[in-house]
Length: 407
Image (tube, rainbow, N blue to C red; front, side):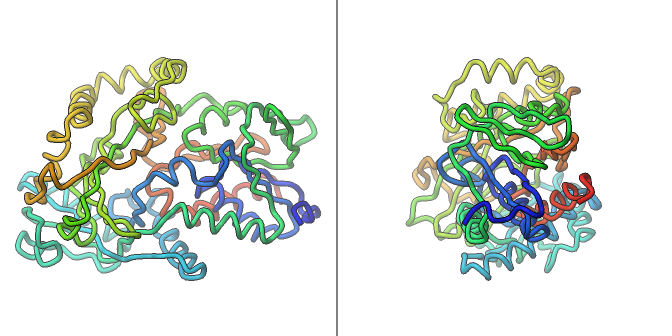
């Protein structure tokens, strides 16, 4: 029965995405006598970023050695593989190519190889233009890196398995609970409020994704970084053309951005997606072009970091909008490394929204960022590879929660 754990106190988690559930799971392991309650405003788990991402289990190619991303991606990949095996969930190591399409991209490819080697990416190989076609016969390029252990999973299924595990152990995953207020009590603890009810906890973790800055501010955290929502749009190969791609094919990303560029992703349940782009969304949860919330959009553009961000990157922004409005333009980048792709080969697929944190000076926050305010620990930035790293983020955040409070 929920509520039987009391000796270890009460710990709340806001957000039933994969990161919030992984934090709750780790807290339940470390404090089996505590009562863990996860709250989320939706009527199911993993509705937002977790349920709209590409499903890729990243091997750690891109991340600055020593960064939280590098450390937690490496650890998280192994934990995720074990979790999927334990729960009978699909885990397909289909492999990944990062392709340098032109000679001028070779230095950037070499930098990715350096980082990947430092991060201990298993089985990494440098391939020539001829060799890469042995891995992906329809791909072309000057050279490539092959990461054979990069995998795909169904992250929504992983999140549901985590939620079920928590419930079996007597903890709560309370859905339909939209946080409208947080009150830190003078003697310690936090009261978490929705319009209909209140929940008192001793410690609180905020893993609210697209709403993380808003919820964290309710607890008294600083204003920045602010979440700027970027919609990532996809197309999906028609079934008779999925043979064009065996695994994952990525371009060499632009080092100025935390986005990886339009790429090909094989799904664990079958099918191949092409995308995403990165277009400023007109609502926090703006998965469709018609999803417009003027108040949220105004809040985004008023953030001081938006002006320097726009000044520095307006050309890229216009290019992304062109790709959003034109399938031909969208597919042109993908066709650079899979020339056989045609407009008739794809159909529109569901979009996702990335919660991109932006600092006050306009910097796109690249690494994971975690704040602590009294009894509240807030995950303020958890972009890709957060899903891959979720179980390791859970360890990291849970340890910090209990250390901060001396538990």
